[in-house]
Image (cartoon, rainbow, N blue to C red; front, side, top):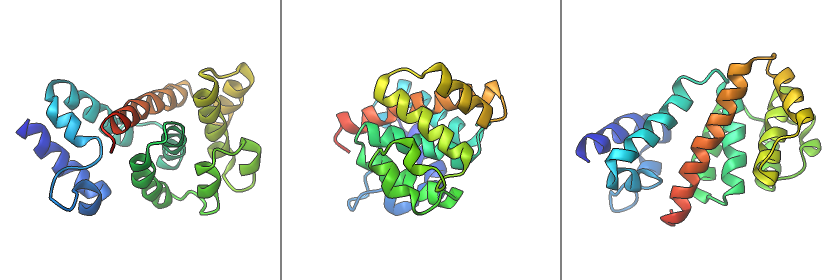
Length: 174
C-alpha cells in the first residue's frame, strides 16, 4: 500500500496539484484512496491512467476531450473537476466547456472545437450514449486522426480507462 501511495503522490501532485490530490484532512481524494485500498489491482489502473497521459499517440487536447465526455456520461464530478483544468491547459476552446458538460449534439461544437477535437467528441458521445459507434462516425474520426489505427485504439483505451476511473469515483462517492 505504501509503495502505491507514494507513487500516486509523487506522480499526481505534479499534474493535479496538492488541492486536488488531498482533502482538507490530508487524505487522498479522487480515485486514489480505493486504488490504495486494493494495491494489487489499484496499481494497474493507476499505471494505465499514467500511460494514457504519457504514452498516448493522441495529443493531450484530444484525449482530454474524450475523458471529459466520459466523465459527463458517468456524472463523475471529480473527473470533470480534474480534467477540465487539464483540457484548458491542453488548449481546448473556453466556449466548448459548457457545451461538453451539457453533452450537446456534436454539431453544436462545430466551429468551436478544432475538426479533430469535434470528431473525437462525436465518437466519444456516440459510444457513451449508444454503447456502439457507427461505421460512419468511426470512419470520420479515423480520417480526422490521419487514418491512424493506433490513435483510434488509444482513443478507445483512454475512454475505457476513464470509464473505470469514473466507476470507482461513483461507487466510492468521490
